[in-house]
Image 1 (cartoon, rainbow over the protein chains, first blue to last red):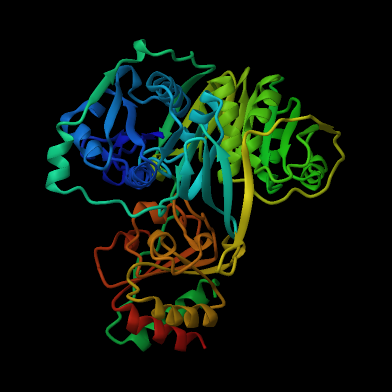
Image 2 (cartoon, rainbow over the protein chains, first blue to last red):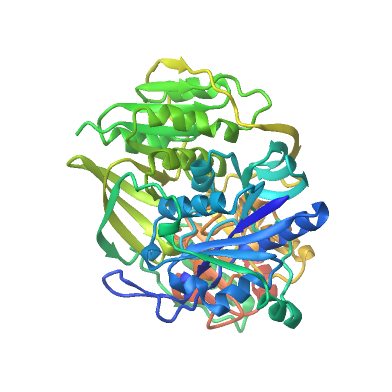
Length: 258
Length: 301
């Protein structure tokens, strides 16, 4: 079974700063393997080991996604090889454009049975790249996947739904987005990191792929900080917990919320 | 302005906000509904112009109709809305791919302007807000809102669809009791400051005394499995706006706070005086939750 894990090399918004006019400054936010992607790597590795398959990492973005550090971070987490579409034309690419590039790369890799992704990217977090990717390929997609077993051709997929879980039988090829707790990712050791330097890397440019043109133009007309409610920030001393509790309850009743 | 608008519906008719938003744009509003006929009829009565329905799904999950939905919407492209639920995203993703349409998630307002639309949305996990103008087809994700009240009777047009190769073979109920946090006026949220699962009893006692629902930060629902996933508050979990929210043993990372910023009042109880939660709280109690929570429970009795 040939499994592709589509991952992202991205910074965490928690480390970004936002100016008064809403401009996001990423200069202090270092990129890394996106928060939930190690779960997808682990799920893919376990399935490949159980079925005798291959795990191919795939990412697309500006040139920095092909840095040595970025390559090793991915390759040390259970991948057999990696395909990287590194092209500065992808700086700030939207969901649909990114998914179209990934779909073209999946076609380029060829004979792929399954694409696994993480739950959502740490920076954009729309949970839409896997579903648009599936649409570009004409494959089915399922999200919130908690377990995968089976073999090339026919998979048994468990996913979370409102109020429970469901087991699906799915004919390959398919795109699956893992839930955040679908697997406990391994922590790469020194041996994994050293081995990562020797694994095959294929680098592609967008021009080498067959990517359809966008269907609409998007123009940013305004950015701002979120309009947060003003908070009281009232400190209640807790040296005497009972007195603190009384003070809080009185304050909440006074504010009319209890 | 005569833009076509569509709503894609993946088996759950809780799309009241989508209908309201789509109608405000004028033009022809159609809904592409996957699921049992009853869902199609609820949507048809809810204020849309037309429903395209793909027949009884049988053992096929809603995602199996993604291509059929893309075919229907692709025949008359425009502004396409979907709710922020997993299966709805799959249908919307198939449509966006068919139209090569940009996807705008976390949208808060959509208005018609000229031949296109203007969308305001939260970006990068809620750290900023962006307004964009779009010319051409676009896929927009909003909170679905409530099930629409019956106000009309749009025609339901049945379209024969060949589902993709996937079948539901088992369904299991969660071991956890289900909860609708969105409807709760008071919510007690608990995080990793809680040391053991057994200590949840102390939180339950507080929730009972405060007539509150219990919620949690992500690790308690995903990973530790102490509480059901529908109780997890955060950027990819529930977004709530209760009268009062108690953040107990929650550090208040951005990822969590995005989900509670609508709360009228926020109370934070945490042992770390530098916890970010205190920057967004109305009442700040720095101290040991194991002392403060029982005292608060007593004070509320």
